Image 1 (cartoon, rainbow, N blue to C red):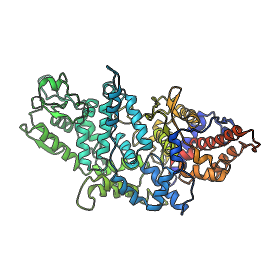
Image 2 (image 1 turned 30 degrees about the horizontal axis):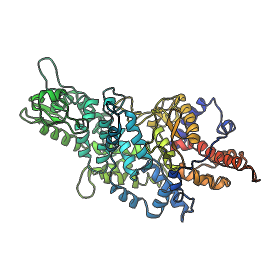
Image 3 (image 1 turned 180 degrees about the horizontal axis):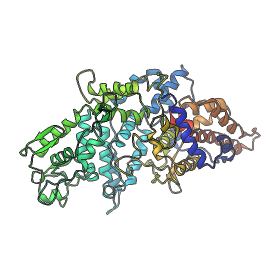
Image 4 (image 1 turned 135 degrees about the vertical axis):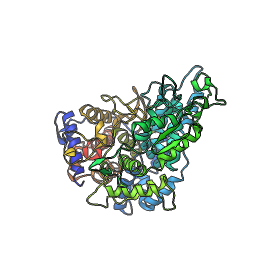
Length: 584
């Protein structure tokens, strides 16, 4: 476990060097262009500068601890939040975040829809705009980060051609995950099962009872067990597999899938009646894309259903069958370790120790007041664990930052603002000219990467470890990320040639003449104060190679160019390093 950091760095660095033609970081420094441009004078940028003025922490070590915690519990630390957590502590920050009101993405899409011309339709890019805006600027960064983690477990995707017609519905699905992020897992599971976008994505919506020529669709019944609740094999409380005669024990059989699929029949669009036309989708309620599905008795199976040790009589209603199904899954002993381990992986570390998983699973099983499935208790256990805090020398937290996390981290660290107020950013999941990832555009229900992915022919594999996010990593994506971020650090983000989302580097510019202080700030914001000496020396050398001309009354623009070039160079080289890519 203790060698995972070096293994992960080596695996990523090998891919990075291959993509870059084998050059070392130092050799790459000499090829990095000197960025041009000037800082923005927008009112949005000016409004934040007073709160972002560099200031010394009372306890530098506390700031580093706060920065690492915020890298786990948010889309990335900001200097003001680092200061706040360093002074109040992580526990107080968590409790304050639990009480923050939720901002709905559907509300934003409704506002966009109201401004469209007659015949205009919402597009998936409208959701992307809302996502980036909230990820970068919302006052509830914990909810934002946990919701994104949940979206990579309970997957729906715009890659589904039908869902592209329902961007507001997909936004509402994401809102539903956020609504239950701090609630109870049972309600979250039911929210997932009854949301029409999940119904479309995994074909539960319109699932019909069996007849002489067809059987109920088994898709959602299988995935709610395999991916959303209990997994494939029986687990011990610490996440290890239970073995009988040396072999793992399957949690369910095909017969269980068949029985559960019958129990989940008859669900379709919400509306004021339960007519066959509405079940088939011919009669549409204007809000059916976000309202929970309703059950239609005419289409619900009336045969006996058997699954996971349960037997339901044919006389039971669709609503009653769903309740039994959700309760059965929710109370299965696998849920705590199965879901707990995945949340740890998404937020903290790829290879949590069995003891860490067990501590989280126990908090899931009982929050201390006899309540099972308390998400707040589960999250407290995840973030307050000694492994998450780096207090266990043998089990230091290590995970690869996936591309979306790197971009949002840059956004938050450098206080981006939107010139339009809309955060207009196009689709960036092209591997060559983007980052190879976009929110809610997973290629399948299995997410962008699997929790148990092992990169082949690596030291990680030889060590018996996993590196889930490395499933998205190859020579093309590494080169694409470097090229994309080189452009973004200099010019901001946008759609096409229009750069709507711009950084505010004013705090960094104030330090541009002092390389040590500039690197201290970049290190704290991006690498949580853990920048290795070798990397620091390399970046420092590159920054110092950009000389700032002596003022002579006529070269103000040359001085400004040199200062912003030093800042951009430091930011880019830090974000390009394997040491940054590995969250620790």
